[in-house]
Image 1 (tube, rainbow, N blue to C red):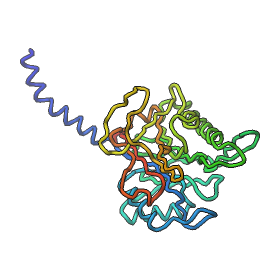
Image 2 (image 1 turned 30 degrees about the horizontal axis):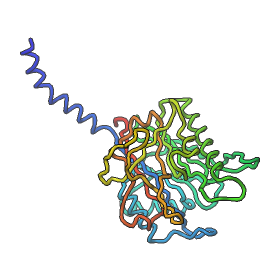
Image 3 (image 1 turned 60 degrees about the horizontal axis):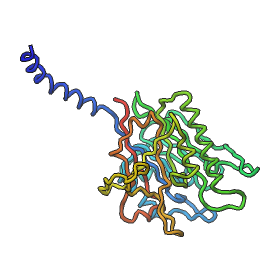
Image 4 (image 1 turned 120 degrees about the horizontal axis):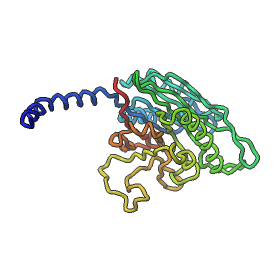
Length: 311
């Protein structure tokens, strides 16, 4: 009997492997990016200058290097600025038919999304407020929330945030303000995951703080609905494991350069719900490292890859 089964397996094995290969090729792979484009304004506003032609060209170059299917922006100017970038990218061969622009309390810089896939639902959050030391504040840039349809069988929810900067203000402690904004965003995430704990959910943006800070810890959460920090790094060949298992490996992950302190830090994040993390491709996730990146912005873009449902 064994002698009869083995030749049959040999004949069937190529068909099994072919079926597996076709299944993998049918899956929709896609790339999501986030990018703080540092005052992408089409005209000066207060102390913020208009974005130079040289800086805009470098931003387009960086985006084309990533070839994202969906890209989220922070420090985007008004709708006209977003549409100018969208049109310029299309002229360069990168078309994003779908877009979202959210204007919060800040009248100069905003969060936005460009997408190759249809945006099938929009839930902008522009009126959230919180109390610090007895004073009420608005979430300055609001939060974008959109549902994106990748294929007929695969959809995910994208939140885009730009939390309070570390710039000191007289009215309240900036770190506490940032934490309160993070807690408000976490509430919105919990609402989605309470309805569906397996929901595909991504939180991206400039959180203006480091991993162990109170705002970032509050946003990531804990327990079964704790978000997964993708922690992309440069594609420079580093593969040394962490010396201490409690810490991350010593790869180069910084996304922001602060000239005043001559410091580099990771403050731009892509965080995933447990459900979305199952589709995450670590091998397709990275911080873009290119010459003269600083011509575009004081931030570097972050890209994360996924495998969605079969088409």
